[in-house]
Amino acid sequence: ETGGDRGQGEVLVVYHHRSPTARGDLWLASQSKPNRFCSWRGGASGREARLTKTMPLSLQRKLLTPTEVMVRNEAAPHCGGKALPIHALRFAPEGDGPLQPLLWLHGGPMCQLSFDYNPLLSWLASCGYLVLAPNFSGSTGNGLGFMNRVMADGCGVADLSDCLACAEYLKTEARKVEPRLDTSRGVAVAGHSWGGYLASMCLLQHVGGESVFSCGVSMAGIADWYVQQRHTEVRYYDYALMGGWVYEKEVAARAREASPITRAAELRAPILVLHGDKDIDVPFQQVPPFVEALRRSTHGGAAVEYHAYPGEGHGIAGTEAQADVLDRLRTFLRVNLKPWDFTDNPHGEVAAY
Image (cartoon, helix red, strand yellow):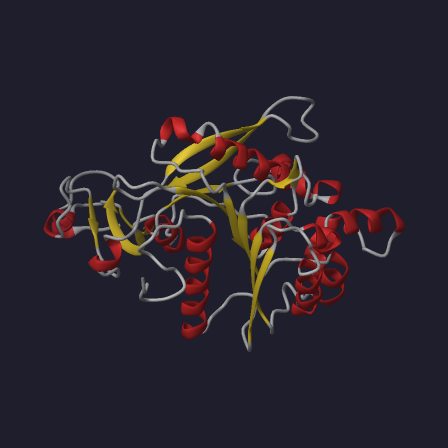
């Protein structure tokens, strides 16, 4: 509350503002009337003013503001035959070139993607992709009932069902609002942590003998619920998600069904697996056996790329390691999702013809 020249009894509020194009700055707002300080700081209305500018304009210009999308899951389990609406954000760059579809899955699962600072999704879209990021079952922001859909027998079931509905949306309805969409090489899926787990589950889904997704990236994802519960540092959380201990008779079958390693040998599309070897949230011990099981697939479409990051934990923190993740992600999607041509060689700097 201020007095003097700035107004008797006037209330000023300092707040932290974030958006898809701003990673966070302090703003000042007047709750009552135009304020001279706000006007002096450049506030057009005289009621608010930006106090800090922490983001370089060169970065800000590269960031995209997503649009909201509602995807209907007509086959959602435990919904009494009714469609379940799934909120999602769609990132698409400007321009006229074709965009290949990429389904990006957030971690958690109990968090959400909102109109917040997310440079990774802007970067992926700028690489020439239409990125759809859904708040699938288990996400926050839609009530406890929606969040609890992934507990116990819904774990790796309800959320997976929503992801499959999003894939169908990208193959059908999305073209009505984005004519640049190119599905000639299918739909890709990728994610980190819980998103990595779901990406692995998605890649092992088949319809008519073919993979639902054409390729995918699993980063720091659960592969084996038995190893997960035994070694994780967040055992209480995974106990709640699985609805008990994996060694309990009524839970054991559910844990096997929800573990990507169970069907890893049925892989029918290219996969990129990235994981820090010091990860204790999603323990690294489960990853090498999972990769080995994936490589046992005899399907002609299956291909496995794998890289472990020495000394890295659940989130890749080292600058060089982060750059390597982005490079591998960009190259993998370029090779497996974008159409090839005669001038661009994704495996090298110069194409010699």
